[in-house]
Length: 463
Image (cartoon, rainbow, N blue to C red):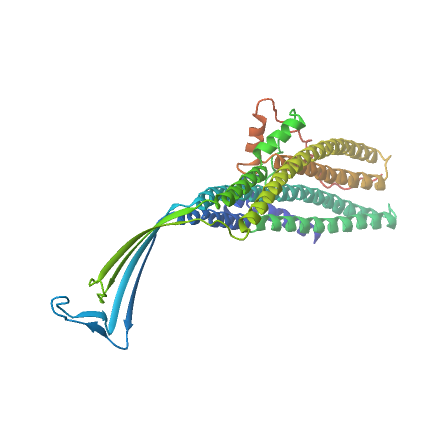
């Protein structure tokens, strides 16, 4: 049954379509629901400019009415002065009018229009930040699932070895050459390997499900080995901080926020100035009125200047000044956080690379120990328990190296994210761009140790 489980799992992985990192990132750009929500919010925010300009563009309105009066009012004719009957109020009164309003001098609208453009820019930068975070999350999920996929294969190899060893130990026990303790140990190792395989399988399924949710795809895929993230190796921390401040959209958004608050403050100052507008009205009615005409029109040039509003503008000015100071401090805080994040990410990467190097060294030692133990066992020097321990140590070293390699990749991704990557292109493309900058060279991808040749289950020879 255990063999069928491993074989069916391997067959399912082999038949599944292969998903690469670039494909996962592209699917996230096209299908991720959080990005779609962010894009719609940007579309909504981009309408702020049209709303601001609407106050300065002509306002045209038309209307019509019909009224049934209780009595009709008219007079005449009165000789040569009023030669015909004039209706002042008809019984059924009909009328229509058209009105056009146009602002000529509206200082507050000037600031509102300028602020609307900054608001759209701010929304665009916030959308870029959301995109970067989503793509960073997708990359993290992909690397985690790919590492778990490698760990699963290591568990499969361990299970195959333990199954072969149990079968051979059973034959030797039946022949009376080993004790029951050795058989129980072999059965225990096989049972533990089966449970570890199920646990690894479920962990991989959970990680694939999380990745599939991010890219809106069924988790029926196999993951291609991702490229190792390339990060600037020779650049100084100060250069990295400068690059991050110039590249990150959230830092740019804090700068735009300062500009927006200053424009809003200017709008409060402009409210002290007068406003001038023109208004034109055209009316038509079936009641001639005292003018003796059914049509009338009027053009009005109006000016308004609020000299005192009870201190409202002074309060608004104080609030706007405070918002400018708040935005300035927020910008400084954003830059300080970027600086701290870049330094911390670089230190984490250095630690992760050191741990990976030690894990790689431990893996090499475990492979050599496994080889020597097998040779000793063939010569009748090593015991069965030593062989079992060597195989378990080798598997643990393989899984440990996979884990440390994952941590190194995630640390590199965090550094790339701190520098403002994941907003366009793939990890490989962004790494090439980082390495192409003057004075910055990309850290070469470290060579991965060659995987150990897949050990075929062999019966344990008789001592």
